Length: 85
Image 1 (cartoon, helix red, strand yellow):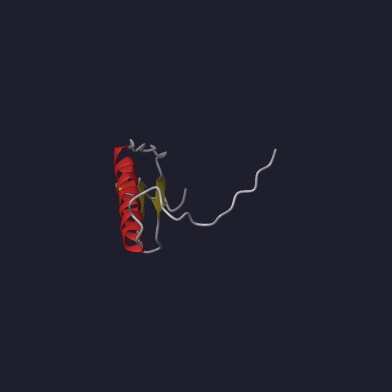
Image 2 (spheres, rainbow, N blue to C red):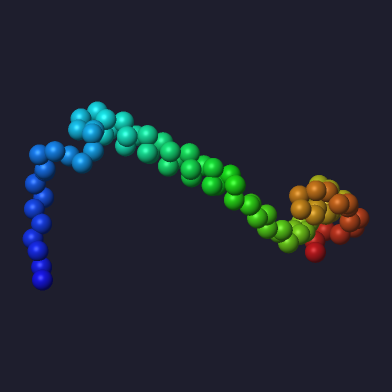
């Protein structure tokens, strides 16, 4: 059995706040509490750091007699006489 519901406002609301100002204040307070909850849950979540594979880089310029060898962006050493790998 289907029953049609009317969307007309009732004469007396079931809650004591009838003014739009109170409704707006409650809505903004709920929005603010939602943002605080999201920030707290993000801070409490464990952060997983993924270990990246090591990156080996080699640089040799025409002006340099040897090549520079870098591991993860830090200079490891020079390879004398090597111009390319």
